[in-house]
Length: 288
Image (cartoon, rainbow, N blue to C red; front, side, top):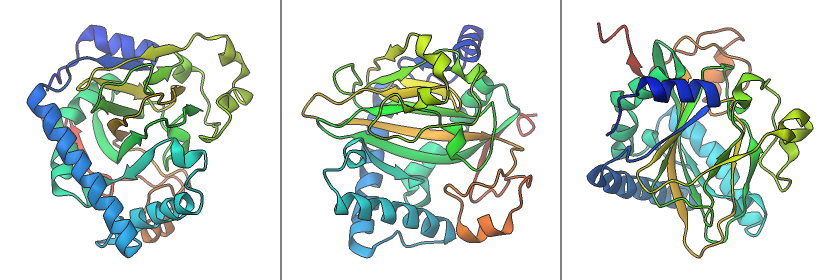
């Protein structure tokens, strides 16, 4: 794993709000990520279809409820717009040991914490995003406003499991938008430009396409505007992602993926430091 961030990469990320790292995974690691992610997704979808949820502890039950509702919506309208944007499975590390081993890798934690400029990093949630053949584009949006904490240092990794091209839905970014973003956001819907209703000044920015060979990692700040093109091919475009929360972040009142019992126990301003729900995978305090 190409996991040591250079000063040039850190500067580019801080300036632009995103960073493309080619050959982040070597060929052996890429194949392991591919097989593990596909297995975890298949297991999750089979569990949802067969039992209406993922059996397990309270965390898995909370995730099962989210994904069961999404599955029901997709089944009710399989040809609906959102159903054809991507297959989305969150918190696979909760239900698959191999996925947990990949996601809990402290090297990932150190890399994203270094880019973000924070002393410690927790997993918010992992997420497989498979854009189906001839799938719809992913509208412009921000990530952090969806989550249960508000941070200008939140960060995500997006790893291409297949070559991501302009033809099959590679990522696009609006450079520097993390610097001026508030926490207003648009949902991922039919209108590609809904986000610009909140940020009309961003219409003047030139978007940057980020084609990514399989094994490439793309990192972005949780307040950087991004989207993805349509998949114009007859093959899926698979990616494995993870969203990260700076250690010490506090609850903002949004439930998102938090288990209901935990959510109801929180008040705004409480530190989100439950190591089962949001594992601390790297801290400079633990490295001496």
